[in-house]
Length: 151
Ligand code: HEM
Image (cartoon, rainbow, N blue to C red):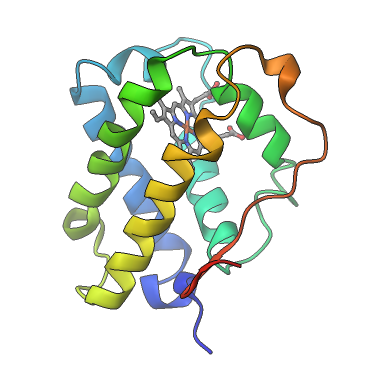
């Protein structure tokens, strides 16, 4: 069966989606701050694209060649107190509003699956460690998402 990754159009569409999302986050007064740190990774958008691609049935580039891991990602988003609760729905809006610009096919089933995945991640795992990055367990598996939800 076609994966969500393939239906979206592969890595180049995920890179465009990450870039367009990033621009919208920078333009949002609440989201601007964390995305403007000088020490943020220079390859942020390609790493975000690779993470989404892998979670949605694409190649294991993020955890492979890029040496990323779910625990690393969650540590980056931990220790934000209540900030992530307020910021997460706005982040989801930035992603969804970027679909057209990124060239995500205008297929309701696909767009619903992508929206459901990002919403689930932003409102669940990405707010799970508000206190300290030390609370994030090592070796967390990357959550995968399929047409029917969590895989
Ligand atoms: C309120 C919502 C969010 C905020 C404010 C936020 C903020 C950030 C920031 C500032 C970075 C850059 C950190 C750095 O380069 O040092 C980052 C990286 C990243 N974020 Fe988020 N994020 C949010 C939600 C999400 C969600 C929902 C996902 C996935 C579904 C996600 C996946 C990632 C990934 C994969 C990276 C790159 C990790 C790496 O460089 O290896 N983020 N995020």
